[in-house]
Image 1 (cartoon, rainbow, N blue to C red):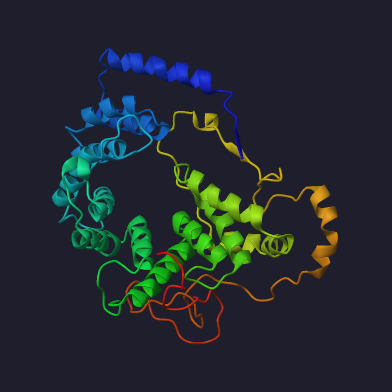
Image 2: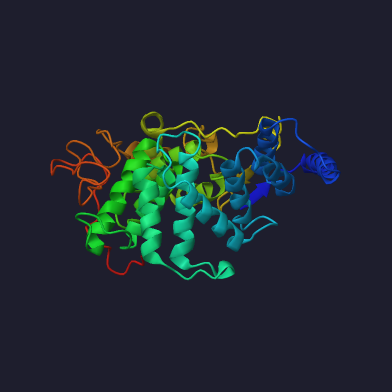
Length: 371
């Protein structure tokens, strides 16, 4: 259940309505930097009617940046300007224009990687609005280039999900579906250890269900708790959905064990949330959901104090729970047996020593599981 606090919605709407009227009157920008700042600020706030004119003005001086944001607007299913045909064409043009860009170019390399990733996702299913038929081989090539050449974490995350379906580009040692699943586990582990919130949330869900990996509900609760802290505003909704599901279904014993190592997990796998580009002073006006479980219990971070009534009612259980004496780590490393890649792609193979991480449930997908 979600209860949204929207006390400031009216004043914010009036403010941006006034800005919209100004744009309609034909506002010009003093500099390209002003156009970019206002465009990104409006984009981050979801005010695409204000962002598009700013990005159109920016096209003359920073065409790749401007068109990249325009493609994101057209590709947003929640916006009023959704046009996947336009989005695909812009992404495809950007991917072609930037095919020879230096991977170390801090401004253009990320755009090239994101464009390749978007092209891959569109090509995998086809784009009916643009008359583009599915082309899985081309989708694999684009995603592989974004993930490996540009070392883009979001592309690596998408690659991991493709591998877990037993699909994806052919690499050394990943010719069969089971080997691809091994590579998918490896990429999720690597990204989770690096603090990628999407990968952490996805892996936490797999750990909770015991799909593709050994079931470990305590680790799942710890990992999704870290993912929520790492997530940027644009990712929080779906990641918090997973957190709510795991938290509300976790028994008191699982919660107590997870609470005992909250600080350690945040220290190991935490990452500062990505800062929003806009500095318009409206960040504190964004509505935050207050989540509750089906029984009315407040969904809280694992580091938050447990309500006194909950602690007293569960005191006998606390005495019977033994907290783990070993340190749990995510994935590959010396002596770990979790998430070994089938080849050296993306990291070294893992030795077969004693496990200190999440051991995979097996090389192949579990029987009866959907990919």
